[in-house]
Length: 348
Image (cartoon, rainbow, N blue to C red):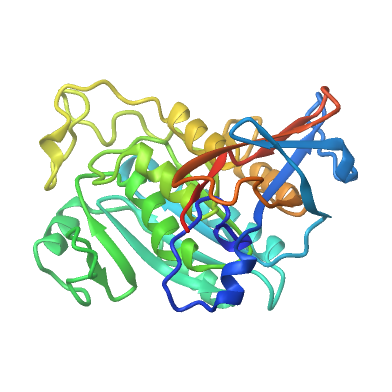
């Protein structure tokens, strides 16, 4: 059914696992944080203070742990489209400090991807501080003319990623070329190609203005891929420069291969996009302002990841049925707010 490493989405097993692993997979695990009405993290609740149901059916919590010591796999997704050119330096510096503070040596690991006209892995999952620093140094604002040249057969590694979706493989990892700001593709690929293969706790942090232009995947598919990979998504909203990615007619911009796909559309609400992705995966959306810097936001995310509850249950139905199953986890104290993913995907 669903194991800890597959929790949010019940990722498909490859068929190489042993029957013993399949037995262990019956446990559905939920990671959660709890805050009081003032927003303060509460990290000392007993198991009896939680109530959990699946598809409206009450479930018995069979596993409970506070301050989980489970290893963390973290993905850092950075928007490098033109709208972010005035904030990229700030993002890079804050991200370096955050990774240094958050990751526990020889236990946690992180990867770095950027997205604009393409989604590209700059540093695969590693616990090496120096490699992550090098990956952050590779972040740079997109040059549209170079992206178009690359997508039509320029430099890079293998051109076939085996997915059948037209993605491309660069020398630095999986790439996918598109029209402008491939936010949905970035979340999808990070979840489906990276996080789904990992065990333990998994989180993705996206730094962006929340506007997608040109992705092959939809917002719904991006959310589903994160849920299937048991990945919590945190959104950090940088509003960037108004109009940098848009042509005179509105939502159209530079074009690219998909540039004419959304003519005359109004600018999407990036805040609502990030709120949805974060909310449905158990994360949160933050907005950078003069009063709340990216460093302060990173500190809040770090505090959450260090103060999670881990709860496990075995569904009361032997075969819950294929597809999505809603999870509702609450604290019995009505003044407390529980932050957790909204469900998982069952796949036998």
